[in-house]
Image 1 (cartoon, helix red, strand yellow):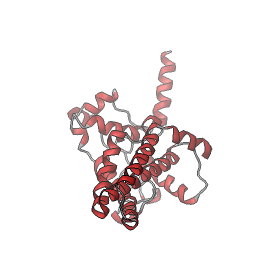
Image 2: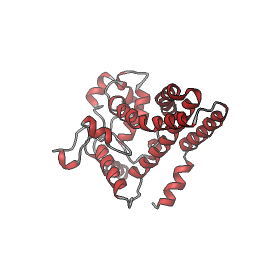
Image 3: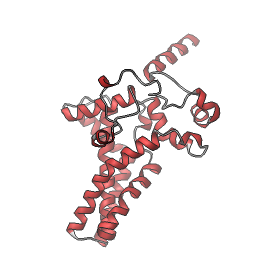
Length: 244
């Protein structure tokens, strides 16, 4: 995949269209409730700065927590927003975040701090920052999962760390565009620093034993897959060929 093909596919996805449309709405509302230039700049900067920390904490303690699957009502959300993504990191249908979870999160993370800094105009500026930062995160996430080979060293570094999170050990490297908070909070690693692959890197700890008590994710998934997704696909293809 070329960079041009990646950009075209990215801007055609409905979530990116939604984020950009909401950004336009926020900007239009800002013209009706403006803040001072300094307040606007401070609120926008706060929105940009707070996002990586919020994402890291949500990624580590919510998406990789072991509590959502215990609820019949929360397990479908957890399955959609992260379990499916780790089951098969190349499944493009779940590559982008689900709007019903991302939009409230962006608003809660940015609007209050923007309001405290510069009132309604600051809230809109911070929300705009959150929406645009999310677009940037999703673009980098596409680079990390699609068959695109970045030429820039810093992007290669990010892609390598993220691939290690998906294919080697899920308990670390929670960042997407930078690993500042991973380094600060002690969750940064490189493959050479970990003795062996995590046995739960693809199922996040949700296995057959867990499913006996909390069956809802298994029921929604039609079973529990284990092992590398490429090997699973090959095994399923061979099974289908044998049956055919």
